[in-house]
Amino acid sequence: MAEKQEQQAAQKPKNTGAILQAVFAVLNLAVMGVGAYLVYASTIGWHSPKITEEQAQEELASTSSEEAGPLVYTMDKFTVNLGGEPKRTIRLEVNLQMLGKNGFEEVMEPENRAKARDKIVRLLNDKSFTELETIQGKLFLKDKIAMEVNSLLHRGIVKDVFFSDFVVQ
Image (cartoon, rainbow, N blue to C red; front, side, top):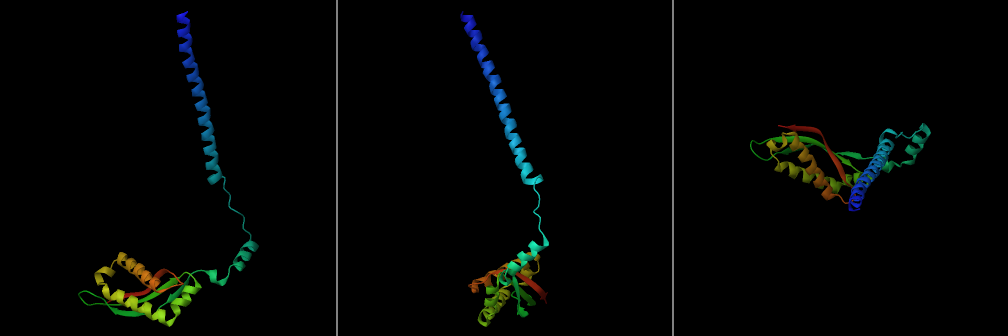
């Protein structure tokens, strides 16, 4: 009788193990199926929305002129002595890309325009030719100009700075 109980005890774990394996296999297939559906729905099954010309014209008409995009303010040309040895001069024209019409109007005010020019001249006086001759130096100068002009403005923000003329002699 003891042998029968041992045999039954030995058979029960085998049956539970097989049942658990089957449950985990079905659960694994279900999770993989849901994952495959989510991938399909988010990438392959995605269709772009249909846009008609009438809808595009209505959307374009609904945007106001203030939301038309960034405005570019072109400053007068600078001719500045660079710091360091040998003595060199730089001539550049700075374009400020403003985020909105309010910022553009603020930078156009005579007081802010003069302060911005003064900050840029001081910044250039501190730079040497070796700092500005590389692309990284020019990018750093653009960021520094944007930060200096943004420190002057209260309503507007300089999004980017462009150089339309950059000559070092």
